[in-house]
Image 1 (cartoon, rainbow, N blue to C red):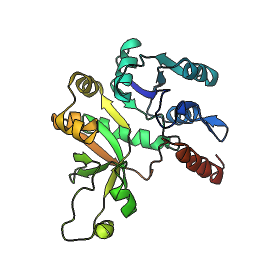
Image 2 (cartoon, helix red, strand yellow):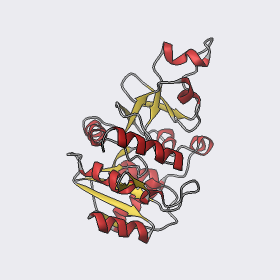
Image 3 (cartoon, rainbow, N blue to C red):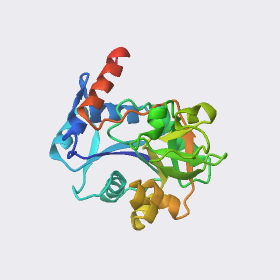
Length: 249
């Protein structure tokens, strides 16, 4: 069985209650849930939340949900808590970010397919970086990978360093990749992530995917056309609304 979990935390320092904000007639959590339900590879989609208001929204739209502790330190921990609370034994768990309302269901499907067709522990999507601004933005996570697609390292810094070339010209010479924060885990990999202590590199970069990578896990990167637009601020939400209006969605 393949289960998609959407962690939905109500509290947010920059945009409190963001899973419930309206995006052209649908809440953000509804848009993410409907996208996940469209993936032919996922058998069951569950919203994992810490808040009764989000529970009410899940009930309104007819989504399966589970109430988890507000003390879960990350979305990944919330996914694991949901699996344990519901006493599920899935083969694959997909951690679907609740703040990516423009995500296409094909991204979920190709990540699941990549995980099941390789010996990887985790599959995660990446997209080409298209500007020097993105390349140097510390909020855009970069990834260096092997030719096989295996992740070598994730960083907030531009990687690899293009020695002797101005940063503004780097993307004209070689492809640079940004990480889209979605993960398809094997059951063993998710449990291993939870049982491991935060790793030194994870603490330095504030990137939880480094925990498994630093402990020898194989993370495969899946190229996608989805550019990624997460909602962290009111300005982000307005950009999403503009995209939705332009595409009549």
